[in-house]
Image (cartoon, rainbow, N blue to C red; front, side, top):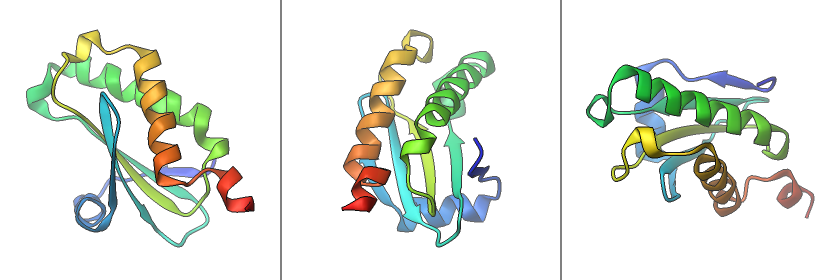
Length: 118
């Protein structure tokens, strides 16, 4: 994740969750907001009630890896928070489902570099 820094501060999460635009997939949802910087910021939030630590960490790894693969197609200057949706157990979510959701969310938000050139 060359052009991406992680969100760590609580006030950063609150600001994006309140002022950012909401996009949803089948297993994850995202809040996206412009940050007017030359890099993206990524935040991950998986609720404690969703599962035990190893299951939550697995989902975070899947989201991070699929984001890393899509990073070169995403415009810089955005703050993105990914949240897991209620429903399926975390253990049953597959890498392919996460990949499809991230691609869908990026297209919905119109933050692909292809859109930037138009």
